[in-house]
Image 1 (cartoon, rainbow, N blue to C red):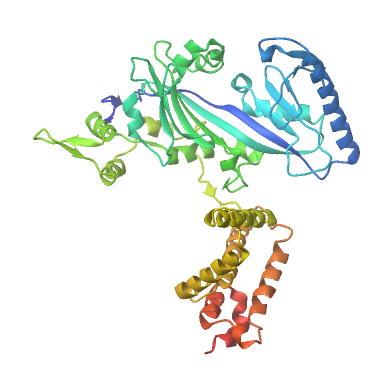
Image 2 (cartoon, helix red, strand yellow):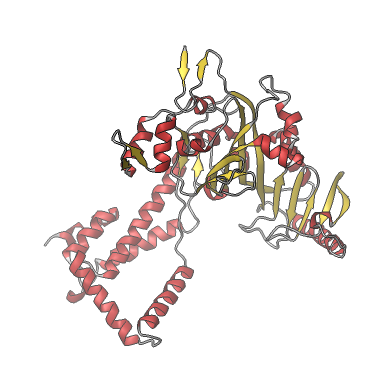
Length: 489
């Protein structure tokens, strides 16, 4: 069976011309959080260990070197050789490194929602031994320092190296994605390659969720220290051809996004689940980014934003016209070939919004903003009576628009917030995550019901809610069935 790609004019007969020579976890970072099971003695021992490292760091800082990476002293820590560095990661007190990992520590007095250890696994370490062995070894080592902790994934990169397809500038315009920050690369790591410089790839998206497609062979020629991937991965692949360039499709996702996605186990920011869900993460990117099989002429028209007519004139392409081209187009044979990871098709992931918690801090900031805006409006003068007039005007406008006061509207929005949070917790429970309710959520529910029901118990006629207010509350808050009689006109 013959399969023809419009984008490359290559004919695929039987065996694909595209060869996958490597798939791997290229980068992995995680944070360790102390747990409530830690004893006071274990916390003291950990803090003493970090304090000893800090004292060694002070000695290192006395060393003079133009290269900061060369300022270190070597120590044996639990039978492992490490460099104690003169500098550290932001938010941490001291960093130790070796050829495998970089580990940063900071002290803590009590268990909190702040991490006490940060781990960055080196790409070469992951390439040589695989991510499972690397994480297992490092976790075992750290248990000698802190016996109990929770592992949270902070960043993971997955990559697929291919031969048989050489990307060019037109491929950038064949990509279908919802990301806004997309850019080219050339051999000076800039976005302007139209000056005779070698085209090396492009990036789609930004730090928290992004895809990079780049010439890995060119990168190795430019940075020889990255050539470890050749003996570790490429040379052992039966499909590797030394005479062809290797292109890498690399995806990157950070905790800001990981913590919102979950599968049938738990959320992906859980380190163990993240590493067990590598094919799922890759599949997520394959669904978010598509390489569409557009022919060269059509792609150039998309790039230029206009189409040449038969009479020689040009017609501008609307956003709708461009969108329809992508909707009608199929994904390329290349994209079909790389849909799986480790020969496994990923499961679907579900995205869940984070619960936003009300806080007095937000109230303070809103009040500061109110005072600042009013003072600007009054040209440097703050007038409490002017503020009162504005509040009354706003209240009257709201009543004319909706039949509700601004205070009633605020209460209704509070009920909406409660329903949204309750829905999120129900989804978590339904998917087997256990009871995820915040400690004070049930109390919040009780207080909200009592405060809202108190509104329907007023006895002063001029303060009695309007029929519009009663109907609005009745629709939003199920428990108000207890007050059905109040809806009678």
